[in-house]
Image (cartoon, rainbow, N blue to C red; front, side):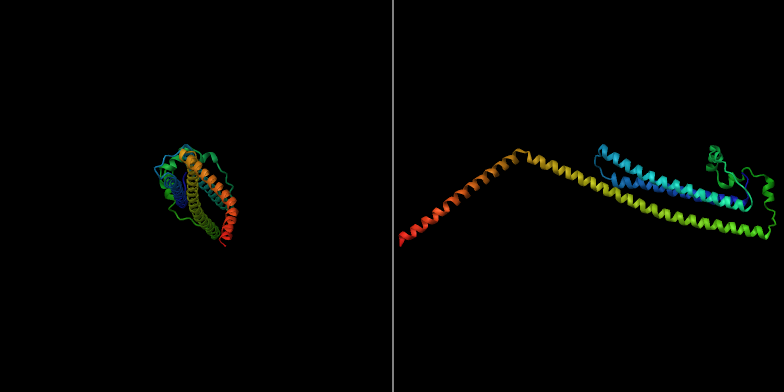
Length: 252
């Protein structure tokens, strides 16, 4: 695992970059839990089994989407880095092969996790290699130009990766806000539906009470009496006019 100082610095940048992304990703997952606690579980109400299931399903969907996005971005970034390494190797007339089993070695992974970059890079470095690294090497102008081109390409890749990361963070922030608003909207809809059900139950209960039935019967009786009086009034109005007219003639 012996590498030169330049490559050691590159490995250090690599680890710092992806460990920073890991920290940011964990903060996003924690934010999903905080949003759920504040938006769906902030009251002291008693939640039904359906309410709990809805909350868990919503949180699970948010966390899975967050993790899926982060893993996909990491895979794509690994592909870009491998492409950069292979391109540089081809300029040196080298053909590289990947040992996928090597990167799955649990001991090596634990070693990288426990130790700092300088420690695990320098652990197996021979003494002679360290001394030899101090000796200046002569490089031809062609090699210098090739190295400059490779460094320029690397800088371009880093800039593009930084732009992609920045845009992804903006998209994640927007998506998180949309999920928070959607959870609030779902909670409001659930509250409205519950209130509508309670209103229907109350109306049904009132319509079945003894007082309501008695009042309904009394109103029906009064309506029947009014219809009867109107009918009598309509029958007697012509006779009443005639009688009035006859009385007026007698007075004459």
